[in-house]
Length: 282
Image 1 (tube, rainbow, N blue to C red):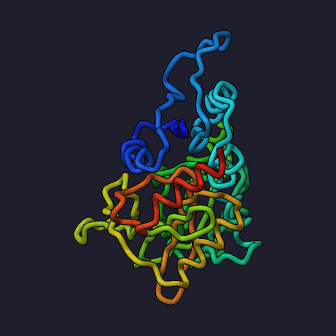
Image 2: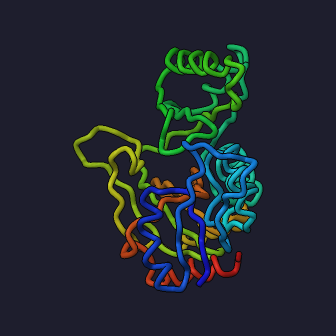
C-alpha cells in the first residue's frame, strides 16, 4: 500500500483518509510546525509521496529534507499560488480572465497612491499579497479611507521582519456569486458555491468566516476557465476561486492547499482521480 504524508491535521486530513485508504493509499499525518525537531537525529518515517508542501516554508524545508519524497504540489507550486500578484500576472499572460488589479510594493508616495485609487470606480478592494482565508482584506469607498488604510500597511511593512511588503488594489464586483472549483491533474473535479446568510450585510464569502459551501455543477465555460488556470500555473491539484458578476466570470485567487469538502459535493470520480494523481507523483 502506498503511504502518503499529509502535513495538515485539519479537515482535509480527516476527510481524505478513509476514501484514499479504500483505494490502497495509507494516509498519515506529519507535523510540520509547532514542535521541536532534532536536525542531527534520523527520526523521519518512511513515506512514498507527500500531499502538499507545508504552508510554513522554513519548516517545510526541514520536513522536505527529512522525508525526501516527491510532492503532489511541491514548494514551487505553493509559491505560484500563494502570492496573489504573481498568480494574476501569470493568468493574465495566459489569457485567463481576472479582475482589474494593481500591485503596490511599499513604500510609494502619496501621488502614486492617489493615482492607483483614481484608476478604479469606488469602492475598491485592498488585499495582502500572501494571506489566506480572507485575512486582511478590506473594502474602501473614498480616497481618505484608502490613504488611511495604506498608511497602516506602510507601518506594518516598515518592520524589518516583514518579508512581504506588497499588497493588491482590485476592482470590487458587487453582488458576485463566489465559486471554488477543484482541479485534479488538469481536469475539473467538482465545485462549491460559497454563500453568506442573507441578513449579515457582509461581503466576504470565505468559509472560515461563516459562509456556507453548497455543491454546484458549474457551466462548461466556468469549468474551462478553471482548467485553463491550473494549466497556466502548472499546478496538479488546485482550488480555483471564481467570481461571477453579470456577464463576467473572473478568477480572483487560487489555492494550492485547498481544503477538501465533503465527498458528496464533488464529482463522483473525485477520489479516483485524486488517488491516481498521488500514484503518478510517487
